[in-house]
Length: 603
Ligand SMILES: Cc1cc2nc3c(=O)[nH]c(=O)nc-3n(C[C@H](O)[C@H](O)[C@H](O)COP(=O)(O)OP(=O)(O)OC[C@H]3O[C@@H](n4cnc5c(N)ncnc54)[C@H](O)[C@@H]3O)c2cc1C
Image (cartoon, rainbow, N blue to C red; front, side, top):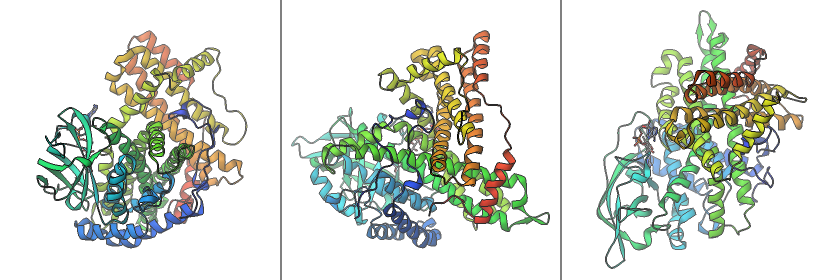
């Protein structure tokens, strides 16, 4: 294949969560403008496949036509779409994360398919790519890359999924040392009905959490009946049962007792991709909602003329703009870290650096997962609402999308678990001295005590830059207050942690959207619609972040005088300047209705 894309970021790279530490726009982020021709071509190929082969067969997919699904996987394999993350030495294309993400975006037009595809190329294949032995890679990767073999990932169990390390499935080495004997059960396994290769997590001797490769047909291993699901009905989800299932000793994946590294790092990539795919799903919904709104008449007018419908459309577009900014920024950061690895590609040292890069941006991956899936939920809900009664019946695509999207907030770590991880990871890194959150808090507090608040300054998007700065102040300040209030017990105060996560998410979204627009402005190509999006988003994100900060303070500081004092500090961190929201909305909606889709597409 052609050369790897040039990276838009340069060394030294910001740490995970680094967006809180530096002024908005102070580092160049990757945006859709940075995509090279090869990446665009991958997207075009995947998008054509998605429209012509997947969307065109949506009804058959919905009826669980697994032969079709397997055939589609093989077709995708023939186009190279299953092998972007697979090293060239094993028949893959060895592309960067951004390219792989673009293909994920294209596949998001159908929920059942995107989950099937994601389980194949992501959680099913990547454990072998990153943690497999040479022999395991040679045995499985070439066939997974073509779709000849289908993969599944089995972490969840009937009694533990969020609490993955509480797994009860056991593995014991046979007395002759030649086989692992597995006993236990797994639950909710995507692709299970037709998969050939299963990545299965089990505890060696009931204690050491480890990963194994289990092949279909292994005696003692059975796949249970299909679940009857609310959405993504065309995908396969089944339980697995292991009754003295014996697999070769060589099918241990990674090291005994190190299964958590495989499980969690693979989930981080899964989260990132699910977030990115969800933003793309919201983008697809803009087209469905705008097209319907334009055509539907009520009270003698097109419903697209009504302010309430226009407000919904504008919000959807704004969320997509900010979501894209976060998506490309995050994958750009991971790619830049990987590119900075001194190790030769496809060597164990390179794989370690790759995993370290993903681990570094675990905070951003959780943010994208929660923010992206909730943006998609909002868009799906409002798209149904715009369709009125027709949105509630099967003939219209939004009905299925509404059902399909619901599971996104449940799998790849529920949104509750990911919310806890966002401040949890920051605080753990801060406590280890790896993330200077408290030094930043001290500097901010000192500045606030001197009456120095973030000011608008000069130049383009000055107000939006200030709003994003205020969001960072809110996050850092409220985190310090919560840590002071609860100390190590903060982990038990989940409402506070969730509020902190929400402020962090609003901040990352606003910071990324403003940075994206600033970069475009710097190159003299800031589209007026993009400008309206970032203005509307920065303000609304700030209002939401401020509300969540107030809630965090109310849950953390109960002594009335101290609470009043803290709320007064928050008052200083709230922007109250007027802004003509309706004018901004109109700029966005007019362009959206005229285009009949998301108006800022890059293809
Ligand atoms: C369609 C589908 C496909 C799936 N595919 C796969 C797959 O391929 N492989 C796989 O391994 N798994 C898969 N899963 C499983 C999925 O990852 C789990 O369902 C998910 O992690 C939640 O676990 P649970 O269902 O046991 O819910 P629980 O963990 O029981 O959670 C129930 C509720 O409690 C909350 N909760 C749990 N713990 C906490 C806590 N500490 N603090 C606050 N709230 C908490 C949760 O957020 C949730 O709201 C799939 C699930 C579905 C529905």
